[in-house]
Length: 460
Image (cartoon, rainbow, N blue to C red; front, top):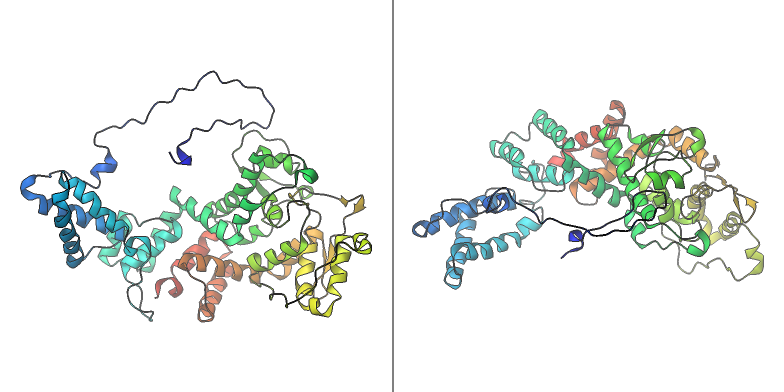
């Protein structure tokens, strides 16, 4: 069995309880009909020895249309029928031979990839390709019957029809996949999969807390998407998505249950938005200590889409064996490192952003002191603007970098929608979408619809 088929029993309460399990009884899946619907959707009724060719053609036409997200051509179907004729004598019945042929349909690049018809030009992509691009963007899955029907009718490209379909898809439960997959790619959440928390420094680390850390950014984006909230909520919000483990970790009022839900925050809670989420803070640490350099680079790359240049070759690392250096605070060590002319140009751009996170330790907990010394999370940006900790960082981003963040958000989401990196030639389109987004109030659903209706999305 695969891991998803195992039966998991766990205590979802944050309170310690002693439970002894006497026995577990599991009933096997039952079906309302036999063969089950999953079978009859592929192998249609009406099979007979006298009309095997006709039946096989009908099955292949329907299956290939769904698998390849467009009608198969006569030549493509004939090719599969030729293969079927070669396999049929080796099989006990037609269905066994058809299974082998259908497997080749699923092994085709036409199923495995979004195949572009022809070279890039200034013409719109065909309607069937548009249906696939839309469904994989919002649902991470095949277009449904309604999208394929509109594509067949040539109506999907109509702006009103396209917007109506995008809105329909966004309220479908399958849109949760957009929140999951985009959030992981945008924020680099795979780093959490490799994090090893130093238990000597932080004690035993609850695996259910780690699970909640992974889920929080996804749940937060899903909440912003569900309510068409402004994308600036990612910078700062008056709510957080937490469960009992995270509420305890953040020192919020006690909650019951492991499901994440929106909780109203007070200014004194020091949370809100993405920047103070424990999982994002933890994955940008080394598991023992905070890591201002990692956190600064992450913010520049993922939040502002302004990655720093790579470091020059042969730059010396900080010598932690030097007892004089060990006497310095982390901030003082970074300042000393920045005094090296070879290091200054990069670190002057990175360090101030990362130092603003210093009130949060390696697992995202708030702290006022490090080794009994007060935390100094103040820093000056290259433009001489002073950031006074996380509160100052958020204030600065909201007051001075909203346009940059909105553009970065458009860039990241458009790249995800297209399944490719954006190029210099896409900049004008990204700027146009960003301007419309700002005019409309920055809603995340609005951004998705603006991308879907843009030439960037619809042209080859």
